[in-house]
Length: 83
Image (cartoon, rainbow, N blue to C red; front, side):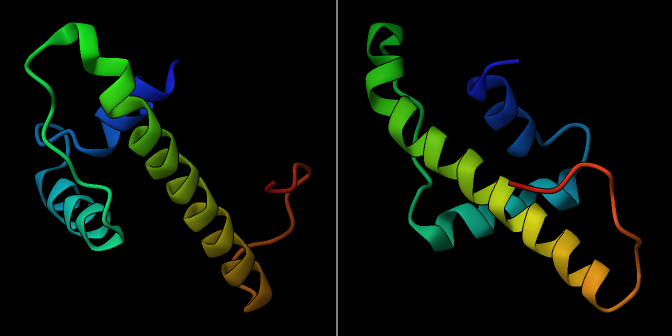
């Protein structure tokens, strides 16, 4: 799965409309929201850098949430640590 696939999942309105609205707000708040280019030739150069930052921030946020939940005792330790 490429980062574009991950990004598409993050902003997908069909599978989780409420979550997609919240994620769009979060991405906008971070300053990474953008309009998709109409010229597909420029897709990677326009979308690539912010998409990589969005995916990295999302992964960091998920790992931080897991650490917090583990610290307060909601979940136990996993065999695989977050990076």
